Image (cartoon, rainbow, N blue to C red):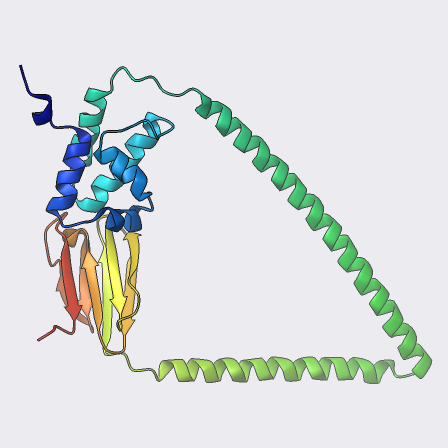
Length: 254
C-alpha cells in the first residue's frame, strides 16, 4: 500500500518549487498580491479558508507562474485529489448583489453630477449677472473685458514658460544607465534604481519598458527568456532560458 507521505500533492509541489527557486512566501505575496496566509494554506493542502475551487485554481495558477513552476501540472494535482468537492453555490448570489450595488452607485453618481452641474451653472450665472451690472454702472464694460483677456493671456504665457523651463531642466539630467526591455512572454521583474526601494511588477507580451538610473540599476527577472534587453543603446537580446530566474547589475559590478 502506497505511503500517503510519499504521494505528491499540489501543496507539496508548490512548496518544493518555491524553495528550489529560492523564493520565500513573502516574495510570492509581493509578486502575486496573494496573502501569505493563503499561500501557507495551499502549501499545507488546506482548502477550507477559500470560498470556492475557482479561487483556489486562480491562486495556484498565479503562484506557479511567479515561481516558474508547471501550472498545468499543479492544477492536475489539485483536480485529481478534489474531484468530489462541490462548489459553494453562494457565488452567484454574491455576484448578483455586487452588480446591483454597482448599478445603484452609478445612478447615485449621475444624480450627484447633474446636481453639481446645475449648481455650478446657477453660481456662474449669478456671478456673470453681478459683473455685467457693475460694468454697466461704471460704464467700463470694454476695459473690463480687455483686462480679463489680458490677464488670461499673461497666465497662459507664464505657464508655458514654466513648462519649458521644467522640460529643459529635465532634459539636462544625465543617466548613466538606460535599460530598455521588449517583453515577448509574460514575466515579472523586480527593479532597484540607485539603491531605491525595489519595485515589483508583472509584464505582458507587447510591453516596452524603459528604466533609467543615474548611478546603478539592479533587475531580477522571473522569466529570462521572456524579455529582450538593450543597455545604453546596445542590444543584448535574451539573457536566459524560459522560466529561468536571473539577476543583472548595470553597470556590471567588479
